[in-house]
Length: 284
Image 1 (spheres, rainbow, N blue to C red):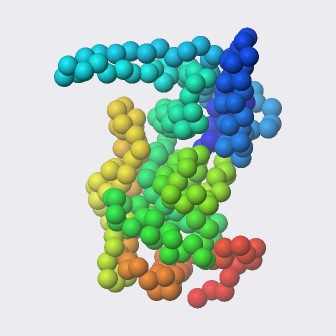
Image 2: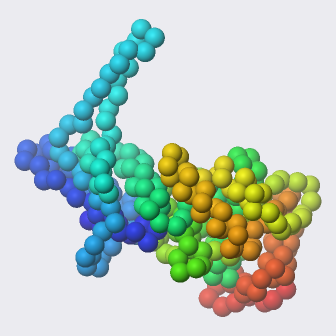
Image 3: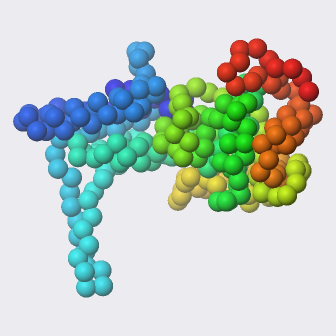
């Protein structure tokens, strides 16, 4: 099985089993992955993959150690070597999604991009990202616009620079907004709005790179060496992408829609395509 995620090809190998129980366990996991991630399955011929996940039939190793007089047991979820992860038939789909995120983080570390905590709506064929610390209003901002714009993310997205332009990809994880349809589609980045809840509406362009990096670095889904790499990407984003703003807003759906539409049309020429519509809506 091959998955297409954020422009990468990930190969999943199911090592065959002999006895009936092991065959059932592997086939059940395979069927679950095929169901949950069906839109990310690649049906075309694949000549080269970027990463491999091998699901083996044997039982995972269990380790233990003493902690404050208690024996703590650990189950080995996976082993990793260069561009390959080995895991086991006993894992759940949630474990598999966690492994997939680990793979995605490793691949992002080999290219020019990051995984960012954010919500996003589709506006005129481009993505408008809402990001900020917990409680700032990422999900609230997207939910206020959902009746007019398609919500693409409510938790995280991959941002990549490809041929000098910035694009976004959905990540195949369950989000708070379970109605979001996940696909491997690529979206061009339209704007990044660093949100703050307020009793008014106001937009300020973020002028300094250090302000952008300090606000966005805390929203990275990463760690270790990958964090250093993704901070470098944020620097390139801050210097080469001009549509990054602070958005102060109040929880008022009609005012939010009016202000949002007026702001976007003023800042850069996007054509508003209403949710569910095939033709551009009227210009404000």
